[in-house]
Image (cartoon, rainbow, N blue to C red; front, side, top):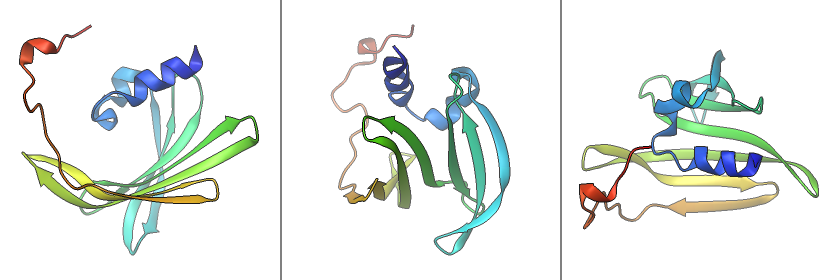
Amino acid sequence: MEELDELKEEAVINQEMQYEKLGYKLAIKGVEPINGSDAYAVELTDPRGKKSTEWFDVASGYKVRSVKTSKTEQGEVTTQTDSSDYKDYNGVKFPATINANFGPMPVKMVLESVNINKGIKDSEFSVE
């Protein structure tokens, strides 16, 4: 059931704007340099007590790094995700480059295009 709750939270669009509603507790841990720029380090505690840390660029406010530790059958795995090169798509900024390390495996993702609600009627969305 815990995994299902986590997946539901991860599916929330603009999760950072919903932390209070989702029951997260936040604590600013200071300012640290990330990729040559100062970033606020924010420790998150989810409703189940799991902690993670996110960094937000001081100048832009964009999330530039996220670090989470998960328990797996092989033990704990720390995932670091760096987001950069934010671009505007219909008034919404998305990171065009995401570099992630899943344990020892690095992955680079490059955003090529974004379609926001293309071909979807408003009636398709429901609020619970």
